[in-house]
Image (cartoon, rainbow, N blue to C red; front, top):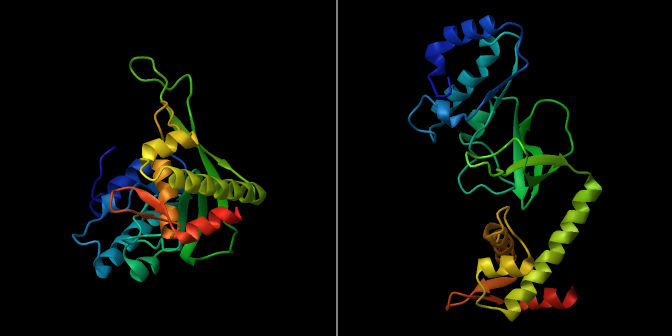
Length: 238
């Protein structure tokens, strides 16, 4: 079925369907964990612990003792260095590891936080690219965009970080010279476009938000932005 269902009530059916399919399974993906939550309060640690144990129980239901990979929500107000799952330690206690995917523009870093049973590993870096394929079209025959992930080396990551730093400096100068420029205007001046040709306002917003967090720019009373003294110093040093 493509719909969600109550896993605990259909354990036998799941086992029968898996056995009927034949063979042993190596991986079960639950997308998403909250969609199959059988409690009524995701902030309740007891319920979240029970939820984690129910998901872990799929290992014994599906033939082959498969790995169970569950997509879950992080805590509220999550940041790249705080991507623990909702339920906190109670949930973590019932799983073998918490893998994380932190995105910055087109780069995503796959690593872990909070807990990992097994050998440590270095972060895996991927770049997300928007592409089209001749077989992927809408009902009018127009190409539909999709995304693919390419692995990148540590050296390539450093080069991309340097490029991002240069972009920040470029946006600082644009804001300094155009204090009332909109995100759309900034994206246009930076040459950032979506697949359809429209300005990539979200990319501009991410960069501007990063500059605000670093206190390099600030909002003005008129709805525009201005470069702070710290930002002007960064411009002078670049």
